Length: 617
Image (cartoon, rainbow, N blue to C red; front, side, top):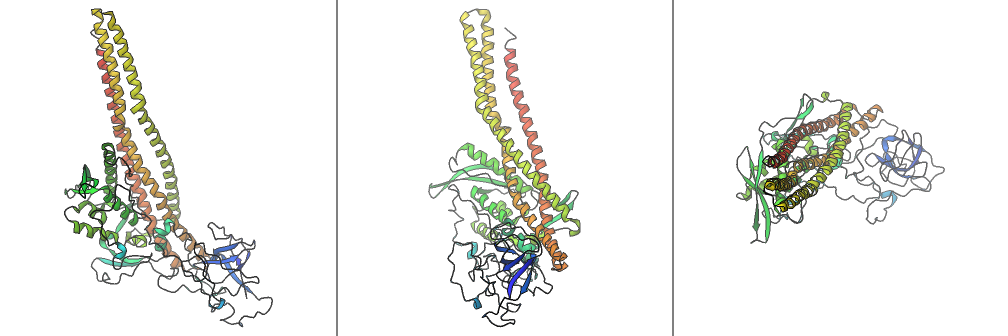
């Protein structure tokens, strides 16, 4: 029989390799076997590509004449019992869609032995397997500039991949071994269900004949590099996460007066960063700057290099896909040991540390506490053990979402959530634009003060002194006081010029440091919003399947519950962002205006001193 299908709905292609459909349009199929919810075929306009299987209904019509192929029956008519192959094609047949990979295609096997591509590979191409998928959440790579080489106590040949049982290839191993249900304080949580597409280690789901009521599945994203996929959000929503969660790993979202928020840290603390010191190793061949950190909850100083901060940031960015981890101050290839650069970096690290310590989740994270409390210089073994433990953390990717404990789902309305997320998206875009504009204006104004204003005031002062020198030529005793007063006025304007040059350090530079930190936060939120939006899309798709009678309500409810978990965490993070934003900008604007008042008081004082010099003339 010829393989054809009729489009039930309109579909607009959005990615390469897809084709658009029009309702009631008849298409020719390359195969009835769908690939992760997608079919391959040709539409009425001659375009060939992929389209959602749930958008079409397969129809069968007899061939114009008998063919030389096998007789009718489950093994020869391409029916439900037949193996998937590309033998049953319309007259003039179609070739399988070529792989969009820079690899040579293998020779095609005989039609009777053709095997469909492996699950998880959205395009055709015979039995060629896709490249191994990267683990979820592994999108960030720690930067390694010339000033922060990994050449000291961290140089250990073993890596996470070398450890037995380490995560790899994007799989989530079953943890029923030594860390099984008997482990104290650990609970096995799983979202696995038959909704999972191509379950890991199992057979692909079977699809009933088109004439029977089918159980539809929620399709995967074709873009496997999207944040929603890499973060593990898709795997979690589709019910593929499974792992053990310790009591201490639970991240609680509670309902506050303004909606979902992170549960407060019961043991708040702060941390100072002082005493940047240049140190050497390898008999002076390697130099670096070490900072002294003193947490208030331990009062025990530890010393850290910038590369330690960089490693910590990489771990946190990987572990928390819906939390905005503040960006570190940027690296600099030259001038790393100049006093101005060291001072600026220290101020940036202080801002970073304040945001870390004030976050209810990040502040209590094990890897952050290890960073703050383990004295690497005196206990190298403990430091390396904690480092490896953090790098082997199993609660990343899809499993991270298992650690979230949220209020009852009835507290969320998906339409209201979507409206809030859209509103916050507009807010971040506007804030990012205005922060960029303010940063540019402040930087330009500071430049004018350091160079232009200073130069102009000193030119005025020089002119006053020139007038005084001209008056001294009269050699009249009664004019000596006037000459001195005018000369003092010139000196006062010189001093005011110096005040202008020094002032940006006191008021404008701190504002620009704050803006830089928040621009980092704003750069994080598109990915966070993308994860939540991806979950909402899956909910809408599952609801559509329920309305069409293609999915059980229980399965769709499971998707919605897991989407609610992501939505709770996203809204809690948005609430925290607004809290610290109000706190930080209130404090910084107060500081800015106070410094401005002090500055103009100094200017006024200089002018008043010059004025009083004329009283005795």
